[in-house]
Length: 140
Length: 109
Image (tube, one colour):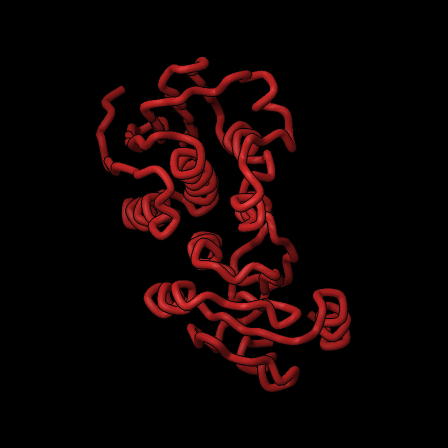
């Protein structure tokens, strides 16, 4: 299975002004590559949540997207501070976002659930004080 | 019904005019962006009280026909600029979401 890197974007902490840009570029790229729109929609939802998680919760990071004949893989890696309690973070409705973020309609505690729901496979590597790396796959 | 026809029938304020001839496919109501990302469908009307720039990103990603900001909530200048760049239609009404939806139902949407 030969994998090809098709997108690589750095994402800054708190950069709401560019929030969604990476996912938007990805959507357009996948459309040009002829990926079916239902798969594109799923990957776009996953990429958006990963992107906003880096903006809202991390010290900054990057998103890389790989494609092969079998799958599209989104890898979101940040430089910390890590998810304190992953089990809690995966509960629908749980969020550590502050009120200001919530007022903007983020921090509903649905991000990781959306990622799990719309991916065929998700791997989360994290821990308190650690970088977080999330790998999400949608099969083609 | 197209976005343009809807604007005329309900006298909606046009804050940014994107593609106005789009045929409306349905409606999604919500202020939580993750839910909107997951549930809003292409060419839906998206009814919300949010008026900041990330609304434009979500509208563009989901491909909604238009965003309708209800209760005359403020639409930020950055959101307006971004909507122009992304060709996203933003409309506004003093109506509550409920009253707007009642009118949409009357119109058969």
